[in-house]
Amino acid sequence: MSRRLVTAEDLGRIVRMRAEEPWRIGRLATERARPAGLKGQSGRLMLIAADHPARGSLRAGDDPLAMADRAVLLDRIVRALARPGVDGVLGTADIIEDLLILGALDGKVVFGSMNRGGLAGTVFEIDDRFTGYDATRIEASGLQGGKMLMRIAPDDPLTSPTLQACAQAVQQLANRGLVAMVEPFISARDADGRVRNILSTEAVVRSATVAAGLASTSAYTWLKLPVIEDMEAVVAATSLPVLLLGGEVGADQDAQLASWSKALASPSVRGMVVGRSLLFPPGGDVEAAVDATVGLL
Image (tube, rainbow, N blue to C red):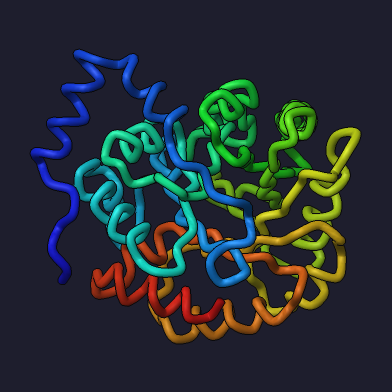
């Protein structure tokens, strides 16, 4: 296991700044060195996803509280960001600001997570309200774009306001020349009432086509799509840039890497956004998991 890059002392430093000098956080954002573009070191983007906790989703693998310890989570993110080929991070404001204080975001691509109101396991989970970043703050903070989750549940009337809010967010980002990363799913509740994403070819294709049509322009819209068996049909359904969603921690890492490698064969795929699979891989070796994934790009 590699040595920790974020310690309890570092967390104490973050807390002190937040309590005593919160104005410095905004200054760190505006002074941050920005990336030259969205091409990525390998020609494709490799981003670390770290916006799960704000939706109350802390599980990774068999551990329901894997992402609950902030020092541990930040340490794993910083270690991942330090690896060659990793271009940036996707997160909510609290995590992005922690990383700014730690000095981990200079030159990195940063996407702000926008709608985290559909808390995991709640009756209102599909009503994914925009409780995180908005387009104005994304622009002011010098971020490269905003990400939104858009789940379409045919039997849930809360889908409609979520669709409308996502369309408005795409428009507001586009008006500022900022990328809107839309993560769409067709979803349904299982027998226990839990929201599950349907990963059939038809469902993923349908969700992608709906997401692509949001707002009055798609010029700045990218799609974040799950990796399924028939990715050829998925990428054929859109002319928008696609980022692959890493998904849950897989018990068989080799099989997971093989499926990602196959999906990356398409020129429409412009990179990957991976969170728990890299931050909490089986065996716990963050660096090895990141390097193996970067190698696919």
